[in-house]
Length: 484
Image 1 (tube, helix red, strand yellow):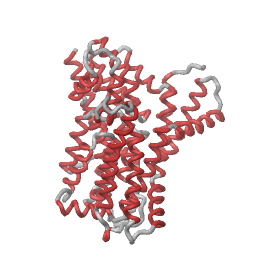
Image 2 (cartoon, one colour):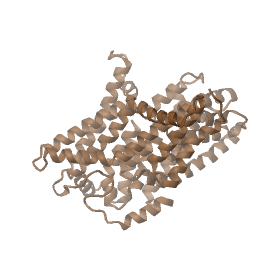
Image 3 (cartoon, rainbow, N blue to C red):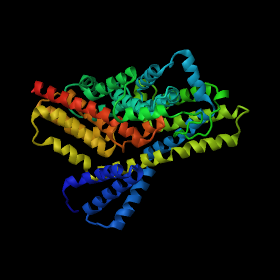
Image 4 (spheres, helix red, strand yellow):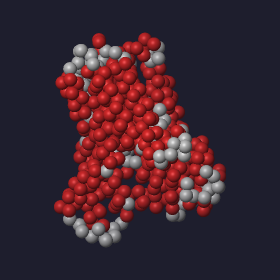
């Protein structure tokens, strides 16, 4: 193997980012970043070859596509396009919008925003489920009140992950508790996570800013410009944005054509979480509780099974109506899938790039900078920044947690820093970096659920994330100074 300066491991994500800024196109940028990463890996292995790096890039994509978890995520992302297409084509979205307006639940822009925020808070079981549920429910209402899809993407993205990490009775909590369990801190993992909640400044401040945005109706920066342009557009019934549908039968639509598949999606997701969790814990019915089984469930399996079931329910509800034919519904379903192909390609390439830079050691290099020559009072803030940068470059908050917890917990135990504070810094940093990253799968799913362009979502959400991130750094510096 050939040694090279570890700072070179930053080149792939930086190359991808610069390419995005230059060409305003994400798939090619991710592909270029992936190729650069594979070139560095081949150099590291002592077998440098451009042709070999090209082949390694292709094989990386094949390997990631063949992993069951990734395949499920990509299939789910495609099938949700068919589900959204059926909901819209049936007229169910228009009927639901009118029903909610007439009932006063979403009679104006503020109530619509509050309903979206509330949905994201209530559905805390899984971040993708939270984003999808809130996005599907709210898209038509945001159009009705001339609020941009970018605003919707910001609200659902900046609500789901912060809520999931604060209310840790979900897969996020189970994952983090598994990471901290090996460390002897004198507390149970659950008690440690509960103690970290008040210190998770980024998650709390992000939710407060979202709530302020929803309640006041005020938006700033690029999002304000998008809102201004959005209000100048005339939305039509066929909604020419990225819904994947060509027609809206709103005049004959029934609200249940949207609500029933949506409820099937939500509740079957919970049911499949229980089933997959039960299977992983064992066959004995008296060895674990329902909540333990749900927490142990597979999110990737459950969301795919639930999406398939909801799509089938929607299809059979529509085919039973004389106004729809089998061929019509098949065509609309494939149109919905095809419209989401660009976002699914982005999601897939981000998975490949994340895997490649993890093998290259980008995250370890960033995290290793934290461990040396730091003033004690600055440690929480530096851990937060390092976690954010790791999540930004790799596109995964969970991967960042796995990387940073083994660094943060020993620092806390050996230097006398509060373990709750250090854990909160890791969790907040991972979510912050995820919110800023154009290669994050959560960012891609949020733009998919809202029906807006990925880069537009990143640009409009970034100032809000940076403000909350900057506030968090200042807060951690103050806490560090006061606690030393």
